[in-house]
Image 1 (cartoon, rainbow, N blue to C red):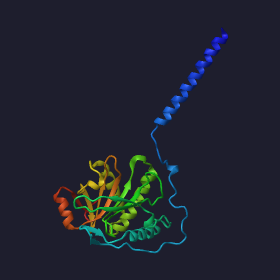
Image 2 (image 1 turned 30 degrees about the vertical axis):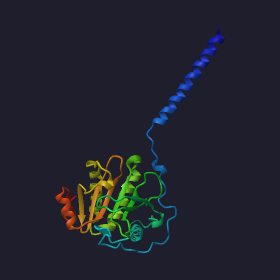
Image 3 (image 1 turned 90 degrees about the horizontal axis):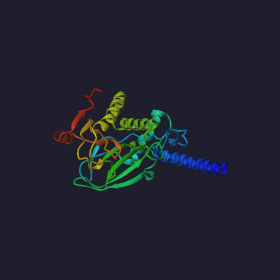
Image 4 (image 1 turned 90 degrees about the vertical axis):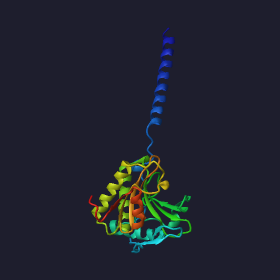
Length: 262
């Protein structure tokens, strides 16, 4: 009788252990997946260079695009070189954008008056899933950029990534909005980052015809974007008074950064 009881107890104990193991596996599988914890974030630069890069200024101003509209006057190569030299001046270390041939390239089809574009994207912080990226949009057949977007994927968000995204945005603001005081650049980033989520779009990024709000200084406009299933994007693009008045007539809130007070 004791032997039968012992066998029954052993079977019951084995069944309980199996059920506990299955429960533990199910709990682990159901946990939110975090693809890049802070300690797993890639090193920004494997080897810091001992000498500063060549001092290259960004070519300012705007030019007429080959398919109409305005473009920035700078090329992708000029942007890379000026970003690298500016970063050195700010931080005294070499966290560089790689050469253009190392950027990823996607094709954005044209629609309506918008020509097809090549979108060059790279992360200044290295490679890794969901790492903030810098994207440069160059219309087909052209050499100069029609817009720049600074992109943050919210699917795997960490404090470190947000801090890096802010740093990247401020570096680009310094290049394209050099006359904007430094404290205003920080306030502008905070405003754009907040507005992106407060006023979400219901269309994909490239389907947005006009922004809901745009801040501008001289020939540079900046606007925020976020939509469910898409990235947060802070966009810089060339503007003139005709473009701004057209947008304003269609409902865009137009804010002059010279007059804006955070």
